Amino acid sequence: MMLPLITGWVLYMAACLFSVWLCYTVYPPIVLFFRQWYHLNYLVYTQAHMIWGHLHIVQATEEAMLATIAYGIKNEITFSVTWFGPFIPTVWCYRPESIKAVLKEPKTDRLYHMMVPWIGTGLLVANGDKWFRSRRLLTPAFHFGVLKPYIQVYNECAQILINKWTKLTSSNESVEICEPISLLTLDVILRCAFSHKSNCQNTGHQSPYVQSVYALSKILTQRLLFIPHQSDFLFYLSPSGRKFLRACKVVHDHSEKVIRDRKAVLEEQIMKGEPIKPTSGRKYLDFLDILLTSKDEDGVGLSDEQIRAEVDTFMFEGHDTTASGIYWTLYCLAKHPFHQQKCREEIRTVLDDRDCIEWDDLKSLSYTTMCIKESMRLYPPVPLYFRNISEDTTIKGHLIPKNTFVTIAPIGLHRQPDIWENPEEYDPLRFLPERCEGRDNFAYMPFSAGPRNCIGQTFALNEEKVVIGNILNKFSLHLDDDHVVEMVPEIILRAKYGIKLKLELLKE
Ligand code: HEM
Image (cartoon, rainbow, N blue to C red; front, side):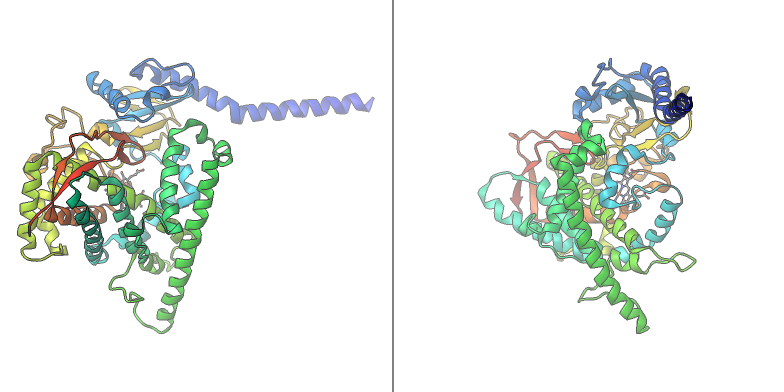
């Protein structure tokens, strides 16, 4: 008598639980899919495949990406849409008005969470109050007084590269420049973040730490482009996922040790009542010194875990990006010898008889700065960044449903013909102050814009000017006509087959 009753109750409870589970897990994504399909599908630039969506076409190739953007430009629409597989659309924004509308939205977990095992919830991935507090505590680390002594570091690292390249000029062969420049910018950030002299430019990736930072950037990029690995479960089961976790451990162990040791030294200085000063023969305070001593108005600083997250964030965000900015500028200057020569003349006038570029020289490098800006217009080092729409949003009459994933594409924005006359032409003079007048503030965004803009942009621009200035002072750059240069918009804008240039050593 009791048994059927109990069975009935159990079945009833199971049915209730199943319905609740359906409501919270299955039902919302289905509703979201139909809303997205209804509101966005008419904005696709070409018919989506039933299974792959536009994945088989997009796969982050230059042509597909530019085709998506070209479709928007041709049809004068504010954005277009592609499908990642059958269920996930992304809205591409490449007009100032659409970017302005979505830039304030939070970062999407879908992509940024993949970085968390490495860079924690540092500034790049944090949202809300956590981001706000970290941004306030980190801002002093990029004050010009802190950045000024780094000029010496940029010069030293550029000199190492120049010595390496000088030896190669005798062979008359063209030289691949992307890898050595990535090592240079890694060398710079290691020295500026925590005064680590890795010698990586000469020894390559021999140090386990350098090897791991390099591997992490690479695996992250591959993961983004390989849809099955968007699932944590499948990714961490794969050899790449396991390699990623091993590399995270190496990087974290290293950062933790450096933080522990430095903290002990700083605490000793504070106990003795001494002012905070650089240790071990350094002439400058590095980012780690600043992070360890920064406090909010309640006297509370960053925890060790937060400091580690920020140091790791600088490693990730601060080396490949700057490298991309440098090698694409060198490529543009090799392609446009007239502008190259103008930069060289400016640099030599500023240097006079000196070898090194100094802090006060930077403001006089206006032509070189315009060339760097123009190169980042055509080749933005961060070609895409992402947001998640938090509420239904209507832009120019198009509704984007809540929880839609949005791609902001400076690479498209910077080629809009109504904003940039002859957009494909390399014309640094478009950055003359009089020609910038009246241009929308959101028309040029290599470093993003608004409160979540790049905190490291002055650091990066200074580094680019010093490295490029040193190189142009020593070498004349020429294209290798047999080498194809093609951009691949991944996390960073890379060159598919690298960039090869002929380097001609100049007389003093
Ligand atoms: C040419 C070099 C660089 C470019 C083009 C660049 C570009 C960007 C862009 C577009 C963003 C916004 C990303 C987003 O919204 O998802 C960003 C954010 C950020 N960048 Fe850079 N970056 C460069 C160099 C650096 C350097 C050298 C550092 C540090 C040393 C750095 C640290 C950061 C951090 C911490 C953020 C997050 C800021 C926040 O959300 O408050 N970047 N960068």
